[in-house]
Image (cartoon, rainbow, N blue to C red):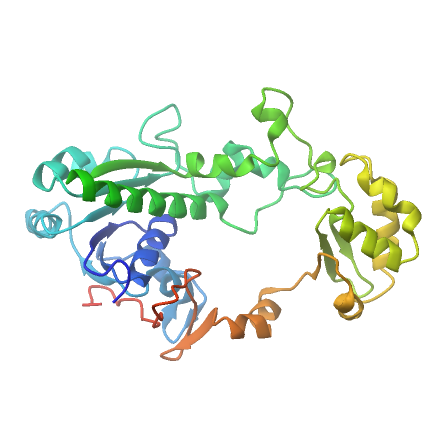
Length: 360
């Protein structure tokens, strides 16, 4: 029994934001029915594969049931209406207007089931100038301003390593759905959620885009305390061509490191505004390139400094800490990233992702 046992969720989403939202509900016991076309969620075909299944698909769709429906056919529509009448949550990720054309927009669905919580996930929302503009994660990040500070030393933006807009929408959508379910307990009525990737991502810039939020100029990474302008929040290359980071600007960390390096005289530079610490950054670059990444990791072991080696995913997943917390698990000859949510009173059991049109 999970926290969401007894809840029935209909999931018409594909790729990442919606499936992540519904998987987190499935992880906690909700019954999630994934409605797919005959071709299936495109993520099913995304390499790499393990034990005959896409790793992407498995890690976003475990614990769900799969039913193939043709929503353009009368039989498919009738089957979906039957499920809607018993459902608590309805998730869809089509472009704005598609559900209305199919006859399953919120007005129609809530007329049949007033208690349903209906969440539409899109890049830019159901209304507005960009509503019908096609976009996946990176284009959304670009239009939200985030890609401008996902840049290298020369200021050129690069492809982001994390699908932040997708993930932000999944988490925001989940939060909204759970809030609506709590509200339904009081009122007896569900609600509609217009969850946009851009809307969900934008609040994430509060600590980096302050000047723009206040109506001023856009921030430049090289002058931002969290984007590369501070010596103690910076990436440094090591002797073996790998990298380490200093990830804490508190003065106690500054004092501890520069004292250990015999350069307490440079502590005052770390107190200067971001963008005015180039002398200290240059010094630390020279220091870190003198040892290998692993040598620095050993050197920092007894130092109270916010330091970390930059690991690749193989190294990261093989860390003892990951095993100790059960974050990377093997089930049925396939690997999964375990849920980040842990309840003291419950234990999560890994589950498989559904085969197309399977019973879950």
